[in-house]
Image (tube, rainbow, N blue to C red; front, side, top):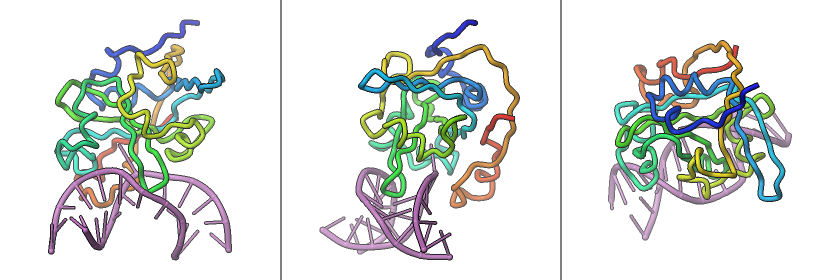
Length: 171
DNA sequence: TGCACGATCTCG
DNA sequence: GAGATCGTGCAT
């Protein structure tokens, strides 16, 4: 059984390669009291570049989206509906804004519930998934099949972008 | 300086 | 089916 922590090489590829690649990987969260949570990633969505009207970076470089312009392997979190933090992983190369939204784990389904249960908030903005000892991703060598679908909650993005099959979920 | 709205969830 | 609840972006 070879368990390995994903490094920057995994994240610094196109988001459409990274997103499906995350399905079946394990999200590990070590709390301040030392307890460890480990869950398999089962559903994600890809947000790709300034031209993607569903991506926050479509509004350009702002204090909020700045982190997506960094090289992949760091965390992008933001508050939605005034109460839920959304967990995203930045992917791709520098100055190429992309991110993967983590929508579901085998044990916790729902993007808002994941951050609530794993105690992830704004303080995780910009945290490295490679260097942090609080959160990282592991590969157990498990190979899974996945399904694709359209992204959730972006009706405002227009026909072209909201119909992209950029949601990936485990089969 | 103000305002409308959102990559959601829970309750009725 | 609606309310909670607030940072962000864009219009004043």
